[in-house]
Image 1: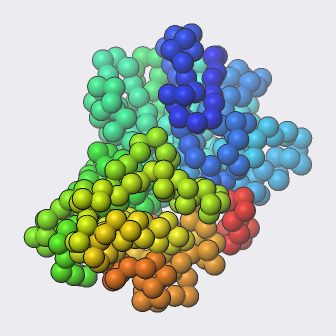
Image 2 (image 1 turned 180 degrees about the horizontal axis):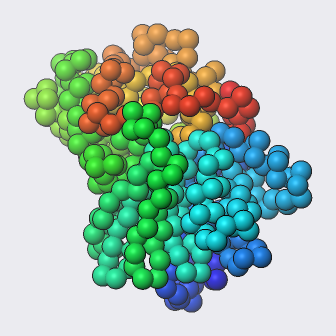
Length: 418
């Protein structure tokens, strides 16, 4: 098995020579930002295990809420960990279960029974590719096909980029196995009733790429719909509607379509800067915003601007962007947010911090408006969220405090504490 991983952008971490050396008929890859576990090279995935039954490689999206308990049990039976991420706990359990059963897919199914929380997994053995999704369906996972090759990936847009066709979504609670004969085998042992599912609504609002579909629902359509709801529920008269790139753009277009106000572009985005709300230090977040976005002065000068963004977490970057618009000559800046106020942390893979760090915690909308320097502020109403997923059951715990399953007693997310 040939392995290569690095820090930074994929285009920086993989040279043409390295890619040419990675030959074979099966492979697994991963890109991640750190949630549980520090952002270090050791924590980069895929994880590769060499054990008595052979070799396994694993990639994981999501967060386990019982990882601390599972890790403790493993450590006290002799396990030695090389990383600080919950994904290694999953890999260990799969390897241990493989000693008891006849197939890798059965080992995955048995191991995931012990996992609580969010996981979409891709597991590679020398002869099989296995995908597994947690019973609540927090994170997306789907199957594609190109010629005689099959792909398991977290977003449908990845299939488009390689010219593959979408086959179907991996269902919540399902373990799928693709063998050397091109068969797709399904195990639904871990499934629960559909009304208990909890897809992360933030995938529709922010995380998923706009050209993806999450369980059959277009992310683009969801964001257009969110903008339309904002125009219906918290309209204000203005000259121009603009979005904060990228996830605010479709919602801004939806607002424009519903309100009849013109849609425009106010920001030039630098595509080589990552997401800012996940950066650990406030100084890093502010610097990244300045590098990432630049206001087009001619587009906003003297105008009343409605600025649509996907969320306000700590509020400092939103404050900075509002100030940038006003510095560029905007007469008024009215902020509309295509999600409700964040009031609770997330334990399932969206790195929403402790409540005390959330700007909406113990503050009214008017108080938040004053802090970010906007002329008015409006949020998406909580009762609109189900419409974004076309009625599919969703997790909205970060907005309501009600999660599909009980949150952990001990937070495993590094510096963030419950």
